[in-house]
Length: 303
Picture 1 (tube, rainbow, N blue to C red):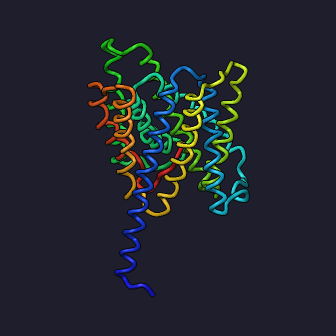
Picture 2 (picture 1 turned 90 degrees about the horizontal axis):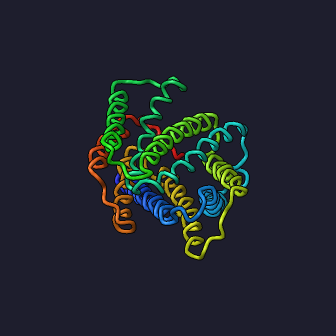
Picture 3 (picture 1 turned 30 degrees about the vertical axis):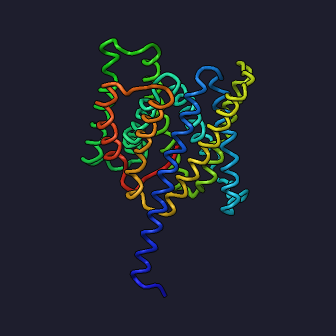
């Protein structure tokens, strides 16, 4: 029988491992963003989505097999629920990747953090979740931050294509919030996380493959490496994030999620010579604070 001291040591060690896994997942997501940004317009968007999703199935299936959830864990009693979640997630992937192409990496990443704000509104309207003073203040801060992000457009100082990137970034946040609502519904219905992730990757890959008639390209070695890298990094990031929640509570992990903004900003400077502008510096604390406050305390999912 373990002593209270031993139990405390084990709890601290487990939480530390969870934090390390969560930080590693943010780095993997940042690596995925770098690969997509580096591809630029040289590879059609649908082709990028296909490789991102198809290659992510490799580490995902290996992880599910290691966990003993493959193939039994893929069974579902809510096939149409998975289709709805996966369709919204796949659309979000298309808009997200195009946003990364059009905006600096840090700005594209920041816009995704409007999703918790929109998730709170959708949870209130669709699921009947409580909308208390704390969440209302989070929504307000997030919306103010989003407005601050749009100031360059009002002053006419947006770069070419940036306005479209902003619109697509906002669409990504909305679609992500919708996908998360559906994830909640599936989870409450008893669906396994592995099945949700697997069928999302499959549907997204099919969505990307459907663009083949529009014209794909034969990637050169560098492009092929970036396509494979984006898929593997995205798949590994999802696995690391899933594992992190097995070892630590949401409250312990939440602050480390926002390292994604830091990694994206550093990657933008190092790889693409992108320097954050004044609108980003003004909007970032507002959006991040709003997402922290608006996110329900015990709710945490991946789109």
